[in-house]
Length: 116
Image 1 (cartoon, rainbow, N blue to C red):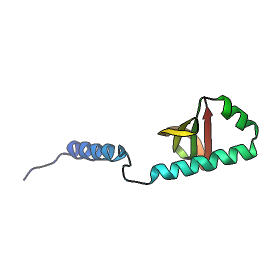
Image 2 (spheres, rainbow, N blue to C red):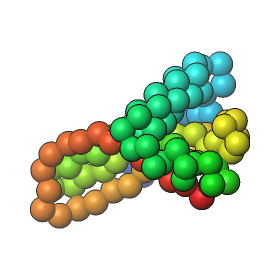
Image 3 (tube, rainbow, N blue to C red):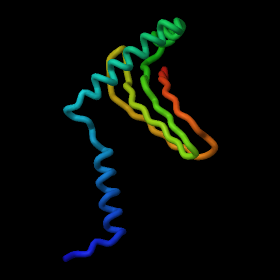
Image 4 (cartoon, helix red, strand yellow):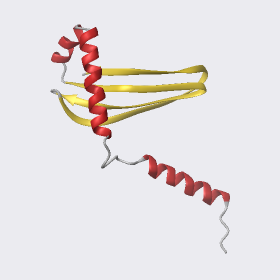
């Protein structure tokens, strides 16, 4: 019988979690969901902030993060997925994540659009 040390077990679990986090979503409907949310976000933005339509026409592209979720209770983090659109066509999908520590409590969701 082989004895597995704690270090080996932790490395195995860590490697498994790392590989699971690297899934590319092939075969899932994640891209369609992100595209639909990004379209909804831009429509909301154009309707509520009319000046952004002119800004969008002058920009080369937009990085649209339709839903970014941020949670914190002493230690916090945020995560969101988005789409890069150039000339109103989807070029690629991106995700953003962050972590923080300090005096914080709460949760929020927001949308983010970056013009470039």
